[in-house]
Length: 455
View 1 (cartoon, rainbow, N blue to C red):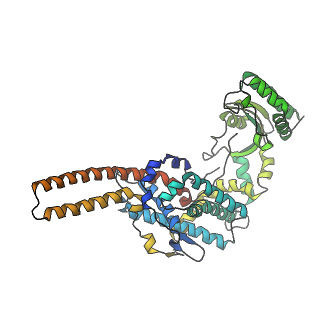
View 2 (view 1 turned 135 degrees about the horizontal axis):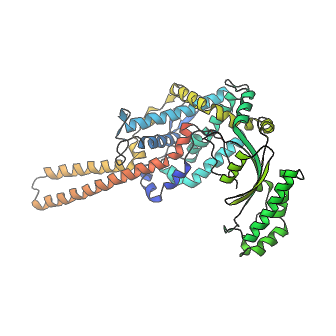
């Protein structure tokens, strides 16, 4: 299924404690400051900072000189600072537009959605707190700019394109798209690695193969169902028999499973659009995807895949369509396939024309260098002080050759400092670029159809 622009969270891991130290000096409180507001929402300075970092990340990829401060270079006929500020405002406007649409459509986050958003923000905060604080973004700002915004964009999208919405897609169109593009299958799976990450012994693999071959044969003959076979395997895994076999065939008793198996831990069903390049199948063994593409509806196979043994049954897509389309959540990934590009274009157009807000000019026009390129700001300040010191020394009466020698030495030291600061500024730009990937998803708008790995 089609995946909307999404956060590249892994890029955040590139940050180091040393790099973060370059930015922490810029922090100051933004708890009560705001950049824009209307009757529905007030956008805090912390949220604005989040979007500034997102915009800075974009800008850092558009400049001609990657080793110089971004904010002073030219981008699209304006300075980098002007470009970053203007782009961040577009992100702010998008957030406010979506909030207005939530109000217009009578939508609100459910308790479950709010809890999920809070938990996701808390996880990001726990993982990257030092980085976010370096850019003066608190946990509430992170949640509002990122996880709350993503959830609200999804709700607005689903409302607009579902039954009763202003752009509702007929169910027959959803059904046709699903039947023509999706592959549905159920599977029972078992990793071929022990709890200590060692490979199963030959005896263990042989026992597992015998068991899974038996399940596949019984399901094919109609003697049992996929779910019954999966439950039988769960019961086996939780039995003393399984513990005894594992202990006797493993070189380490510690490999015996200590976590009780559940049906969900060994049995899954999936519907994937394997005709779309946007569908991420990297979480599935290649042998599984190849098999379900080859299989006929109702066919059952036992697959010896890389890292897994799998019993898979391909579903009849016409029958599965009835189940898929019976709930709003089931329809959502199909709507995303069909209408996400159209919706994002619409959202971009509405954002460009959006004027329903009051802008706090003082916050909006603040100097961005201390926040995004503090090393460059420090370098400029040092050079100014050095220049003033040099001017004073030159005009002092009765200066001696010895004092001139002292001034020359000081000037040389300042030159070295400026060079170091220039390098630090480049490092700071790289740091901001990596950090900003956290902001890009919310700034661009996000919704996705998720796929889980076989494990």
